Length: 189
Image 1: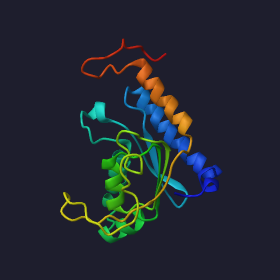
Image 2: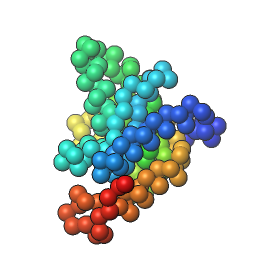
Image 3: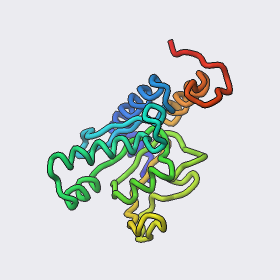
């Protein structure tokens, strides 16, 4: 984990606020409110929000949306695999909730430099809450054809209360897209 000073720096807060905007957009679109931005050289180069309901694809988490956008842009620009690997190793991810196991594994395999997140993900967290997939290591993931984990630096708790408030808003309004809502659905004003 990074230092408390780094986690509370104005730059870190500014990027996390941009991730929060993506999470609010997800909430507005009746998605679980998670958003992220990918930063390289102190500049946002990709952003994402949860789109699992909209796309009817459970893998469309905010992190995957941002990664896919970024990789598509680099591919369109003719960047080689070696350059992609070098570029991603110079990127930082700011996300409102701890990446799940799937996203943390993908980030580790890609070789992102660091992840800054808001609240912990106590059910599915891949950065320490359930599993710790972020430490650097040479282990292979058994089910991925031998892809190597590169690991990344991880810092949590940045604007966690704001992220939790977004989740509370989502669950209080009810999920109209759930097969059988547990509570009456309220509209957002």
